[in-house]
Amino acid sequence: MNRTFSLAEVYSKVSCFSVMTVKHEDRCKFVSAADNCKHVMNLFRYYKIMYCALEVNDRSSELIIIVLYAVMVFFLILWTLMLMQKFFCQVIKILTIKLNLNEYLAGITLIAMCNSSPELLTNLMPVRSLSPVYSIALSSGITVLSLSGGIICYLRSFQINNACAIRDILFLVLCSELVLYFILTEGRTRIWEAVALITLFLTYVIINVIDLKLSRLYMEKVKRKIAEMKTRDLTIGDHQELSNLELEFSALEIHNMMGLHNYRYTYYYDNMIRKSSLRRSTIRRSTLGLGRVSKPIPQEKGIDLNSTLNILHNPDNPKNMFIFSEFREALWPVDREQWRLKGWCGRGILLILAPLYLLSVIIIPNPDYTADKHGWSKLLNCIQIIISPFICTLIIHALHLKDYDEYSMKFDFIYALYSLAITVPLAIAVLIHSRTDKPPAYHIIFAILGFIITVLILTICFTEMEVLIAIIGLSFDLSEDYVSISIRVLAASLSDIIVNTSLAKQGYERMAFAATISHPILELTLGMGLVCLVNAHAQEEGAVNWLIGIHGYITLVFYLILAISYLGWGLIYNFFTRRSMGIYSFIIYALFCLYIILAELEIIYDITFLSPYIEPQ
Image (cartoon, rainbow, N blue to C red):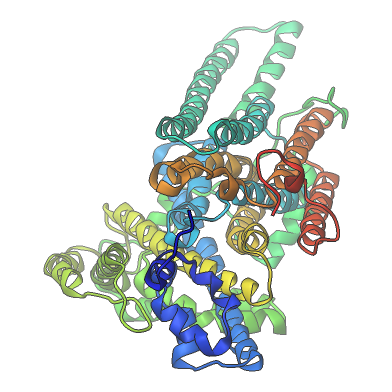
């Protein structure tokens, strides 16, 4: 029986991104009436600003606004990269030291979760309520594995823990196939399947924790045996056994301990690392799978945390000595060392980032154990005690209410002002109690506070980028699926690539590579589990069509090619990284981009169109 839909019912169900199919003169009315336009936007209602406030009524004016939106995306990307590199990395190092983790476990937990948390939260936003989240997770895995993993392999030569690498690569394949099985069995997902995916991620983490504990117990056993052998007279055979044990202990120490390195992220040290990476890695008898370590591995001299903590401390100094000069120094927005080393292009980028860095350093505490006094600035940190909770409360309350005025989200300052009743007396107490030449014992609280506010800001930045990139892509008649798995994913993955590359250059290549491997696992287990649990649309009949999307199967094919290739390269080279691995990864990513572009332009057929699970469009 035919059914007549009322105009109000149509506006209540139609997607806001369908505005591009409406005539220019009717678009203001459309975005004002469509309910979806009130939910998919975040801070600003961009379509309403474009078609109602600016009254865009022709294609040329629309392109000008699109260019302005692209500039906004560019600045948001710069801000996220700066936040991840300058703030996230420092907090992660501190938490790794405090939690007594090794590089590998820190990479698969702290780094991977911090890199993925904005993306995971974005998946739960209304803008992705009907997005192909499975394809997005796979495409994100391809991007991070190929670009981030490729860059790490190209920059540094080191050996990965072979048992951990094999286990995690097999987890990559298991997660992708398990999620696909859950989606295809009934054409939708169920609550228990979502819980199973989340449980799988927790199991993965627990396995890695147990592995670290067992490895450290074995390392202590080897250490005791070495100490016992040194207390007695040794034969020639005993000397050989002792040499082998010391070699084994050196390798175990590399994989099971974590330290801070004594060089900074500058051009000088970057070149030093690249030129000496082979010498600082192991000396191998063979480049094939039969190769093994033939001498102990030299280690970079680590930083003594107590020396950086007390380097400027003198009990005879006044408690507020140089308080204003160090405050001015902390707010200086341009790194002087970087300014001297960079060329005109690099200096231009530093000037562009200066206002963003100044804004960030005012509201985000940034402890740094490699810096003097662990990055403590008494006056600035006391001001942040007031500002950071105020900003956190304001943002969380606004995101919870999701209330808009004509063109932007409303911010209710009531609860944020209430926070001042606690933070102002607390800041005064810290100002009276603490010293300028040494951080207080509770300095770790500033790291936790900085972590929370950084995650909130990154979540907002990623959500704004998500909306703006969708608007830009759809304005050029690109499908939403293509924009989701290509442009959006690449923009979101830039932070992972920059953070992991930065860690690798600073000497934490194992941590960076572990984060690269575990990123797709986290997206496919915890990320997909949360989406299937929270998003009611994923539990409806026919959800398979939008969960997998148009390009889902070809994305899965390239994902499996990349995962199996990593396993093959590892077995061939005994899990030593090579530049050829990086170049191969870049080629795979280029082929993936080429394929989906040709499929989007309908020059070649996509695998999805031949699938019995998704009807042809």
